[in-house]
Amino acid sequence: MTSSTTPLLSIEDAHVVYSGIISALRGVTLQVEPGQIVALLGSNGAGKSTTLRAASGLLPAERGELVQGRIQFQGQDQRARAARQLARAGLVQVLEGRRCFAHLTVEENLLAGALGRGRSRRDVHADLERIFARFSRLRERIRSQAGYLSGGEQQMLAIGRALMLQPRLLLLDEPSIGLAPQVVQEIFEIVAELNRSDGVSILLAEQNARLALRYAQHAYVLENGRVAASGSARELLARQDVQNFYLGQAAAEQGQLRARKRQARLAAAL
Image (cartoon, rainbow, N blue to C red; front, side, top):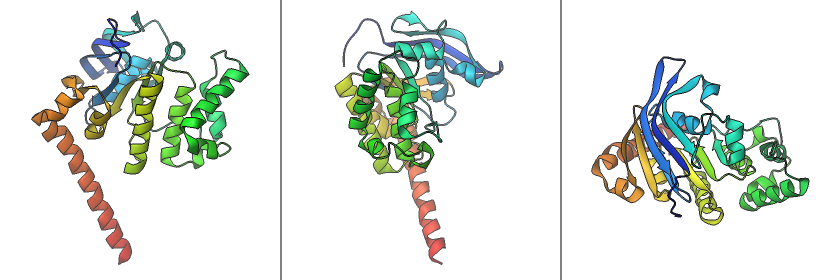
């Protein structure tokens, strides 16, 4: 991890409301240092996605507003900058649910990520080659429409499209959701390699706390729009309250899923 006196991302006392009345964040404070993977943990509705949208400038698209607090990227206040300006400056978000352009090919989706950068055709081609070197399955499906890809391939495509903007900070919203465990492991290994080899800092919103803490250096736990716990990944893994509630909850949910699958197999056999 690279040390720096100025955090890459700083969120201070952030309060966010939707539609002018629905309070989603109630004083969230967190930091991402250059070179870090930071996990943002919590159950559904805890405020993880809202925190990422606030950081990336996407709140207005969801009728959300930062009504109190300050968010800085690379030491500069980001309130005056639109999401597209932040993306060009190096802060890029991969939204929950992949959000690929279903009727465009893999290559066309990736090229869409380079729009507005003003780079030469040669540079864009070099970027494509770097993406395909990291995601070999995307090269194999280069002419396929994104809507026909598997969930894992679509997640790779969404991350690849974000990488076309050459981010310094990548915001990932629930990258494991709806994917098989083996695919999730592959996605997280790719994310870790991006951090190690390319120096991309990552803020990762994830319900699977055990998995996220395995790869992160630091983590924050959100509960009802507030930071309920924070510390190094190792410290949080060792905390009994985090173990009991968040990691235990994840294990229980996985157990319920396995039970439903067994019931489905039994019903199909009858």
